[in-house]
Image (cartoon, rainbow, N blue to C red; front, top):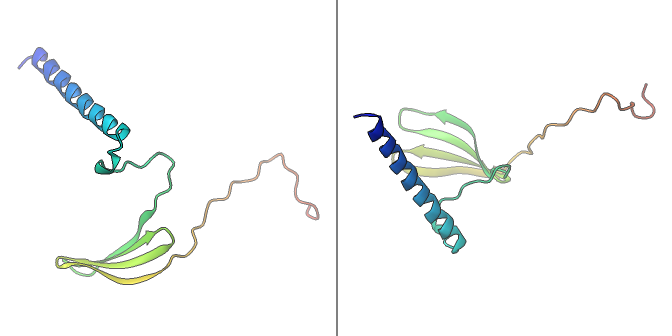
Length: 110
């Protein structure tokens, strides 16, 4: 194989990927987006989060999953999945932006 063959393979790969992208774009424009997998947008909040996992043995594990404002305790194993508990999730702590250095302290403090 020489360089020309690799160039052809790469060009065909780009062509096929471009066709797939064009088909996906046209499907979204035609309203068939529910058939395509969802791609999260940049900056969009995530709704699902795995908080913690614990291996019980080689075949089973317990997983703590947060969905929106609820936590679910799941037992995962070879036979299937079992929901052990559901409860409201504790509030999330958001980072606080530091104050700028040029600001004066609040009144009553020096």
